[in-house]
Image (cartoon, rainbow, N blue to C red; front, side):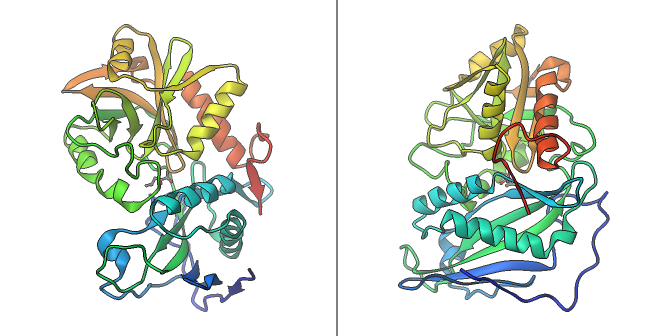
Length: 357
Ligand code: COI
């Protein structure tokens, strides 16, 4: 599909790259493409960033039929733009769409839409340490209906926001986050939408993150829905634990988001010779290992948070420090390697991960 490009006649002033925050500023343009039954995806185009008009009865507003993605663009030392494994986001969106009954966007179309928009707004990619251009593709339905059934028209939109670290301060120096082990609320159950990237997984999680903050924690550690026995994810990211010399993380049970950074972390660790186990991980195993010193490190992985070390697990008000709340060597090495590859300041350790525009 050929995309048309309409450039803004009123470009915005760029924000101070040392004060970006996360999702505070948006670039000059966005990508938009429609889907209609019988016609497929059509009219892909880059247009000036602006409001989207929706009828108050639009399906998405009532029943949450929507999916989204998150990936990043980085400025490399040659002044060109690097994307990190955009094919993985395209594939995940295909799977999310299947679960939400939304028509598939082919991988090639998704990646070329991302590349086209980023190329138009390339001057917005920040270069200060720890920053990046966060790319948010999403699909909603403008269809007017009160009936609960899959819509027959959709819009695919991509917006761009220059960002600092998701966890404040981590762009300058990593720190160990305080994490609340959540027992009351669950994020997802097997058979539900946990593996899909859809808004409902995030709105249902807000109450728990808000509670965690009341207990002085930055995020929550989710447990499985059925038994509240196994650890699943940390906030909006995947969770990893280094117990003795083995790295363990929850297997993709159906309620876990298949993170791109999760997959990249597992591949890197295996390449470096670590034993990695993807399996059910009991909370008691993790807490006991923290108590007897066998839990050497723990960290969260995600596109937004990259590698975010966990310093303390708070379970029922009792604090379980990890690595004396210091950032572990392996967490730091993973962060340096991934961010280094993404920004092109390190040789890519894996073939095909970096796509340069
Ligand atoms: C990401 O890591 O890309 C996410 O989707 C997290 C986001 C909700 C900020």
